[in-house]
Structure formats: structure tokens, C-alpha cells
Image 1 (cartoon, rainbow, N blue to C red):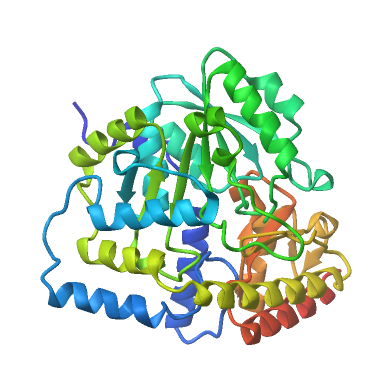
Image 2: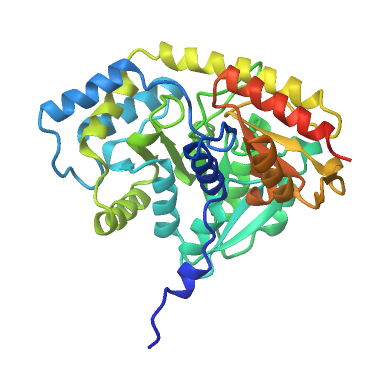
Length: 399
């Protein structure tokens, strides 16, 4: 047998967001002043009380293996947080703690999908969803959500693609990459479809605390007993608490599904970082005012970056309701020239901006949304102003 990687591995695309962020970091290491709009990582310090909890965990010897599902302490903290925030009640055997929300999603797909099972994914979508489904042996079924519809799918379009092989629908609420939020009526229609056709809703609600203006986030599992039993809720501490590197996420859902995920995790990664589990438990149970303070700063940044984008001739964007991303429509720049290079797609624009304006953003094709580029405003207002000045100057040079 010849040496080499598997066909499954060969077909997996690398993360475009991480790849662009890595290029920007390499340029910075070489002394280039790059403004980064690529990575979805809060720039705020992790709250002091959480950092102290991490140190305390190490001092108390919390450096050993824990139960594969996570410590009782952190699962209890997650349960209490969900009860306080949404009125949702989950027992400890309905919760698994994972190495970040990304890992919770991966384990959910691995645990749910048999060969050729179908997972419906609205697009634009986060870069990892289709690849995770592929890794699990499943098939992604894409539903296009146009910008003019607020990047939200029509229930009729979802219903058209449901088959007897449909295993799950991926609900990202609020959304990465476009910041849209599902209204309650649309959520109720999705739940009814899931109940009628018997598929799960994998509800990625990692950005639930980052909601702006008059928008409201509704946790889909709260809508009815049927919604609760059909939902696998995904969350974590990365975005709301500025704890990306601590890698603590969770899934909450039906006992049998969570048990399957625990079995899968026990044979793959075992439990996540034991000290970080303690820190996450503290984050979920501490005073939550710091979360609101960060949210307010994100809202100010959102308002500013949207105003700046829409003031540049040739590009535009809609106002996102949540998360910390904006999708910049760049279709009017297609065919324009920068020096000897013609912009033919979003990837061309992203590379030209990085190489010539020293601004890193992510091309829309990574999110199955050609014609757009995603900018993250999880960076300082100073950086946002500098980056937008550079983008504006770059666009003016196009001919």
C-alpha cells in the first residue's frame, strides 16, 4: 500500500479564517504594520476574576484527568447559567464539556451522522460546518440566503431540501459570518418542520450575549417541549468572556445524544483542560457586568465600521444584529484594476488588501458567499479606524 494521507483527510480544506490570520501574523513578525479584521477573537483581556480562578486551579492541583463529560462543577455552572438566562433546565447527564464550542460541534456531527446522512446548512455559513459534516461522513445540503433577505433563509426553501436522509439543521444564531439573528416566528416554523420531519436542530449560540440595538436573541430550545427535545444547544466561554485560548465549550441536549458524544470524546480527546474547566465555572457564575461592558464596546465598533463601509463608493454592507462580524459587499469592485492586477473575486480583493494596504480580512468564498468579504470588529476602535482609512484609500486607487 502506498504511503500518504487518507482520501477523507485529503478532501478537507484548511480554515480560511485561520489561514488569513496566520498570513497577517507572519507579516507582523516581519515588521509590517498589519491591521487584522480576519480572526473572530475578542481583543479584551480575559476578566480578572477568571484569570485568578485559573491560577487558583493550578495552585489547588487541578491538573489531573476529569470525567470525560467534564467536571460536575462546570456542568453545574453551565446548567445554572442556562436556567438563569433562558429558563432551560438540563441535568448533568444532558451536558458535555468540550475543548471549545468548535469541538462540541465536531463531536455532535461525529456522533449523529451516519454515511450519507444529510445536514442542512444555510449560507453564508461559518467555514468549518461543511468540513465537519464531511469528516463525519455526512453530506452538506446548502440553502442560499441572499443579502436582500437579511441573510436569513425562507422556511419554504428549507422544506424543499428536507429528505428522508436529513439528520440535522445547523442554526447559527447570531450568525458568523453575517451577524443576522433569527426572529421568533421563523424559529417556530423551523421547530415545526424539525418535529414533522424528525431531524435535530444543532443550535450554535456561541454569540448569544453579543446582540445589539433592538434585536433580541431567542434560544430555540425554549420555544416548546418539542423544540427542547429536538435541539442540541452549543455554547462556550470564548466569545462572551474573551476566553478563546482556554478552549472550553459545551453541548446540551437529549440524554442519548449527549451520552454518545461523551463516548466519542472519551475515545478521542478525553476531557478538556481541567484548570480551564474551573475557570469557566467561575465565568458562568460570577457577576456578568463585564460581559455587558464588552457588548457595549462591540456595539460602538459595529456602528462605526458599518458607517465607514457604507461611505466608501463601490462597497456596502447591512447592519448586523449580533456577533462581531460584518459582510462587506464588494461585487461592484469586480473588474476593477489595481496596478496590473484585475479584481475578479473576493479572494483577489483580500490578497491585494493584505499585500498593498496591509489589511487582513477574509474573502467571502470561504463562507460560500462569493461577492463579499468578512470583517471582524473584535479589535480596538483605533485599529478599526486605521484599517478603514486604508481600505478607503485602496478603493480610491482602483480604476
